[in-house]
Image (cartoon, rainbow, N blue to C red; front, side):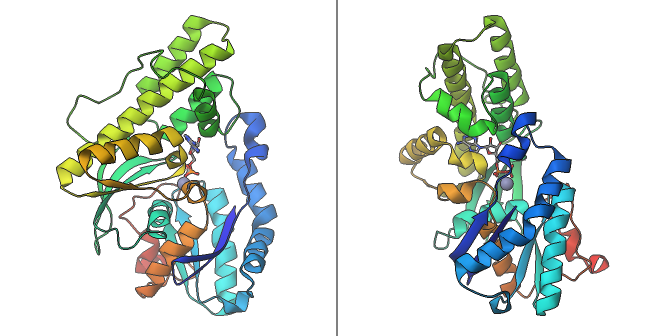
Length: 330
Ligand code: KG4
Ligand code: ZN
């Protein structure tokens, strides 16, 4: 659950993130029911916290942006209902934001006009490349055919007995491992397209874990490092290919996995070689947060978009589809 106050779509006055790691930790992954309950319990405190951190009253707000999906509907509905109630009480406009449009806005918060650019969204639920132009909605260039890369990190962490959330634990374990210890597969690397696939890589890790039996700390480190190297290779290679194919010169990488240090270094190196400058949000804006939603919402409000109180949430919805913005949804 997160809430933020952003001024003029650029300046973050407050950004509060109430993590749920300890709620889901015992289960090794997100339990939807528990996520919804945690949202209900924390929504008002988190919103009040953001207002007080920003040093403003609710009455000072000009508009409310709220995530409408994709995501766990039970959790989305909590934020959506709370946002609606606030907008109604304050008599200010409400706008729904696509989660991935929010992630993309996280990099635009800190950069001067980046568009047009290739956007690589890498999170626990998504792995996709988009072309982002000035006016038109993001155009999907390629996406994962199975698991998201963050999901692969999380599953590998589980296989290695590392704590949830998996991404940071795998990255930490990898620090003391050898990235060339195991030559894990780089799925779809040789095909020409821009799609991704991570389930084969995950299976290869599972087989390696099985083959080794009881894992020493050194085994865990080597497997983590070799898996991370394969995942990073695939992401960087596909991003480079997207830049070549589109002829664009700017790359933005957003989402939880963009916090990965090894990926950030590999992107810098690739940028140096290919002559592009990778843009990554600061670490705090990589993983889910509300500042990115406020920033994206502020752009929509500026364009005059308004979504009524019939606004709904969606577990799955394409980035260029906006069923919440259609008259029928009002
Ligand atoms: O964007 P995000 O916070 O939530 C989703 O929208 O999914 O991304 C969460 C994902 C998780 O799979 C987590 O394991 C991964 O991002 N992640 C990382 C790192 N930090 C978070 N993966 C690799 N390295 C990291 N340092
Ligand atoms: Zn996310």
